[in-house]
Amino acid sequence: ALLEWQIELGVTEALQELPVERLAPPPSPAARAEATVATGPLAFDLAAAIDAAEAAAAAARDLPALAEALAAYPHCDLRRGARNCVFADGNPKARVMIVGEGPGADEDRQGLPFVGRAGQLLDRMFHAIGLSRRSPDAETALYITNTVPWRPPGNREPTPEELAMLRPFLVRHIELARPDVLVAMGNVACDALLGRRGILKLRGTWTEALGLPVLPMMHPAYLLRNPEAKREAWADLLSLKARLGAPR
Image 1 (cartoon, rainbow, N blue to C red):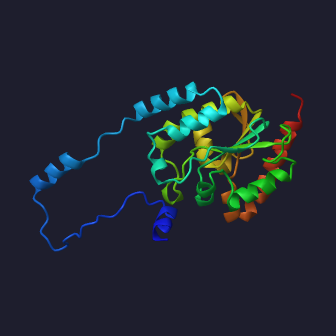
Image 2 (image 1 turned 120 degrees about the vertical axis):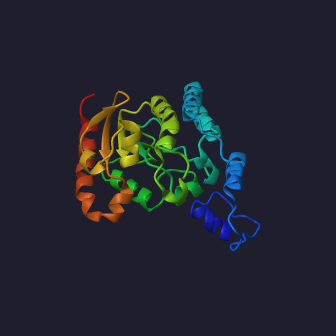
Image 3 (image 1 turned 90 degrees about the vertical axis):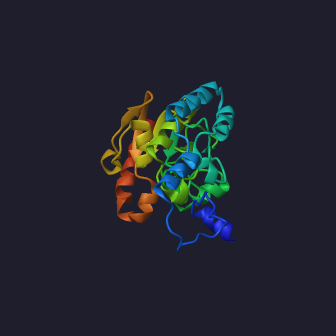
């Protein structure tokens, strides 16, 4: 039970097994320097990690292959503290593809995006304009993924380095799914897709990424904390509905 609780908090490192003598004198500067050299972590090569991600993503010819490549990607430490690699849910043929932020505790347990309270609100929101992740019809379906597939420790935001190394998988995911419209849910998704943040200013204004129209929207988790913002979210949903109904 204690271990499960620690995993819920995102703990990825164990405590020392040997007791620490708190009253012992500190080591000499020379000893400290020697220990740093002996045990210090190797420098992380972000460029090499991004190159590896781009190669793995480009080699995937379909969504199942991309899911396997992402799950096997070894360079992102987020995988170490996560139960599951959360790839996607819904109908991959849907006209609308939603990009969220990162898995929470419920998503990590179930291996699916948007299944907690925020996910339940998301389902109700899009159901109100006739869209569902369970619909077999591409016209009324949703396809849902996240910017990062592993739960960040303590539900923190992904770092710029994590976003950079995982972005090639997100881009390839969108290329393979080929939606008509992207919905960027929250700041992290906007950062990954648009290179911008400030969702309260971005929301509701159509823009473009990867050659596709993008609608930034407030994340359902934000709406749960700020229910007064649901009026703006409803306006954004109506804008999406109008866009889908426009002649193609």
